Length: 233
Image (cartoon, rainbow, N blue to C red; front, side):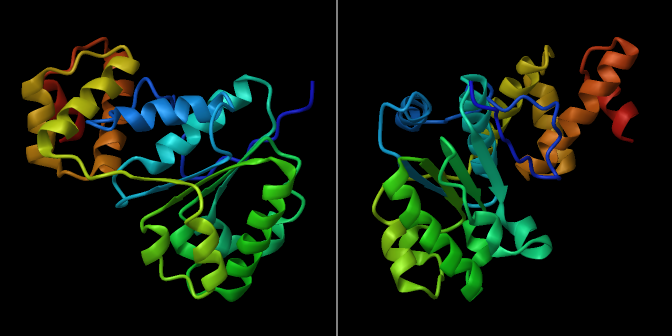
């Protein structure tokens, strides 16, 4: 079996469980089915996900990475927003032998000619090798502000899905699913309190849930509003 190659973004916590089971798909069950088939290599070799920053695109890319890695495939996840600050476009060279390449935060390369050119040529090479490509961006292929028209044209060739921002009630459901995946019970009044008191940014709320998870495990306490106040101040 070939060795597995995985690149994890520095900002993500390795022990976090990124899966389809702990992601709230809202009304987009079709996307769940498409991603499942994509990981089983039963569908298109190229998927493009887009939506605002808090819609869970990175979670889905990491879930696909994990699922295909566990199946013994060679996978590579590249967080472009970090790489444009710390690396050069040569990181996209010689990735054709992967089974899956995930490019996150594609919008971060807009206006960077070297990076746009590198992604364009990488895209073309992958079409010939059969490597699956999963891309995430805040913008659709037609509104991504890329300067290289040929790249924008290529990006519009595959299956494209928009992830929409969640309503407050949907964010509560998403937090409940995340809590359950950690073995926690998150009552409605507690999730509602978190949204009222600590904002509605999902990344921030998940970070708070991680903190509460550690505290709950350490002190063997249930997640109640008094306990949340005690932990978060």
